[in-house]
Image (spheres, rainbow, N blue to C red):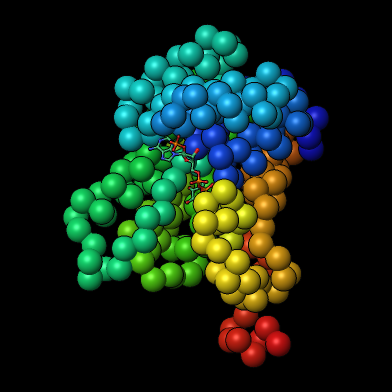
Amino acid sequence: MTHSIHGRSVIVTGGSKGIGKGIADVFAQAGARVAILSRHGDEAELAAQSIGHGAFGLAADVTSPDALERAIQEVVKRQGGIDVLCANAGIFPATRLEDMTSSNWDHVMDTNLKGTFNSVKAALPYLKQSNQGRIVLTSSITGPVTGYPGWTHYGASKAGQLGFMRTAAIELAAYGITVNAVLPGNIVTEGLAEAGPDYEASMVASIPLRRLGVAADIGHAALYFASREAGYVTGQALIIDGGQVLPESLQALA
Ligand code: NAP
């Protein structure tokens, strides 16, 4: 599987930290040429340097089609094209529905859902030229499968990505491009450390495999979707959560 990604040109949005950095790292280790995009170009470049293997970072806010266009042009200039887009950038500010403003809603939707659309639109002309075009979206279990207080907007954005994916997969099949999604459960990221050990322990207790995920768990799933061997798989959502969505009740975890 990893052989077929060797030399491929890959973009990871939101790759400067967390899950995106893990995806970028797994692809780079497998021999792909990786470009990391995030709002802060210096942080994207730092992440790229720590990953090595020729990875590089660029500034691009996924809410800005112009910024994405500039970054995509730079990737094409350096790598000659684009084979894989990992549309991963996302935010998850928590606000209860009763306190949520229209602007809170728009901020999350603009980044997570419209940002997905913007990223796909910007990369599409080059993915069409690839003989192995792949789009991998980072959705979540929250929204498509589960709910969590404070995340009505977030859950809607993550479920929306799957609606987008299914029709995009049909339309882009004409170009041999596949569109799939990874749905992470609770993944250890820099942000989670701030939530403290009690939060982490409570999450672990709800997971049958009794550990949180790591970014590489998501990276390996994305790598599968991007591989030549997954060329007949499109429009699919893969949950990577240690079994977290499975228990019917707390007793089921005993
Ligand atoms: P994270 O650690 O906060 O990293 C988010 C990344 O996205 C950073 O690189 C950030 O860099 C970038 N970003 C944020 N807004 C952006 C924008 N407007 N344009 C471009 N880049 C932007 O988050 P994470 O936990 O890894 O989450 C990554 C994805 O996984 C998200 O889509 C999230 O919904 C999903 N997810 C995460 C978990 C989890 O447990 N962590 C679970 C399920 C799903 P800048 O700040 O420099 O822009």
